[in-house]
Image (cartoon, rainbow, N blue to C red):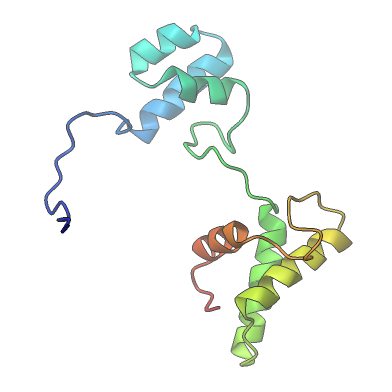
Length: 140
């Protein structure tokens, strides 16, 4: 059986295509208590679930569309990124396993609560993928 890839996909709805400025205005109105979530969602044409996340402070910043939170905070990841870049510049690049192990050890020593594998003493593949996508100058 041969499957063909869709070459020219045309979106059939406008779901998920709202502008960030509308989300920011709607989130501001909800957080200030000017309107209810339902009224605000209808007025700005933004999903209720998005506005609920903003009201419950489950987003990184007001008007931000990102829902996830990284395992390690931005400052910690910045330091880890700088270390990896320094090692890379000295031609001592880290393998993916070494980076995952290093992340686990640093989190443990700094008392950061993580969901890393404690038996293997290593960070997960999902964490590595996310870290590399946020720091794309690294070559692992």
